[in-house]
Length: 304
Image 1 (cartoon, rainbow, N blue to C red):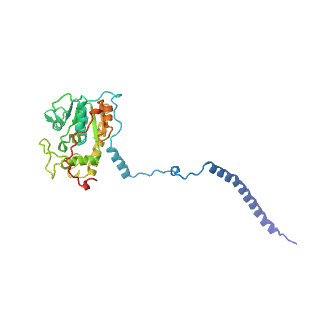
Image 2 (image 1 turned 135 degrees about the vertical axis):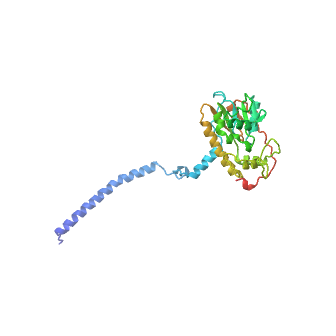
Image 3 (image 1 turned 90 degrees about the horizontal axis):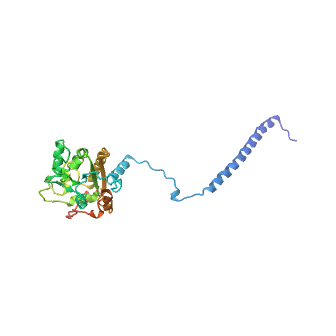
């Protein structure tokens, strides 16, 4: 005979309640599990790389700077369309550098019927009469003694008289209306072109250096943004030109409605079409001029 005490009954009752609660909770989880399985069947697993969730990395300041630098060394694509836009604002003034297509620009505009000058403004050098006018507080071209010029394809006289860099603000702010051109090319090719180009012409001034190449003259000319001793490799020239491009864009943007800025890559195979779209001159007028190579060697440590 089994004797059940009152204590045993009191102990068993809570145990049975806990067991019933556990069974009830288990039964509740069954439909939830079936729902999850059903959803998984509707969304088959895809292990391909394209299905991965990519979280963009946060770029540090150095990466942002590199991106900014690259954009400064490429032309923007928002050039004008001569067919649909307002008439060209004259004169056209090239703000690009030596060995960046100024002779080709001059030939192009001359071919298209524009009255164009190239580093000489009448009987004077453009850089000298521009600087003289600016120093006198006058409009930049007022001392050049020429009129009705449509295109100034080159206004400097080499690195020693780089007025478009040293007097950028005065030039852009001192003309009532203008279309400015900013030329681009591969920085290594530009550096090599300057390193290969030299002349013994008495018309080209330069300080005494160990050589008389264009690059050597840049290094000693003490240009705004390129102090003496800087300009010994591609990196230094790239930085210099990048900062100059930023200045040009910012300065022209100060005069909306007065000026336009056209940016072109002179090495782009479609540059003739781009020039025709911007200026209305047939693309066949575009060509490369003054591209002679004197075969001077460029040390490898400078190409960096």
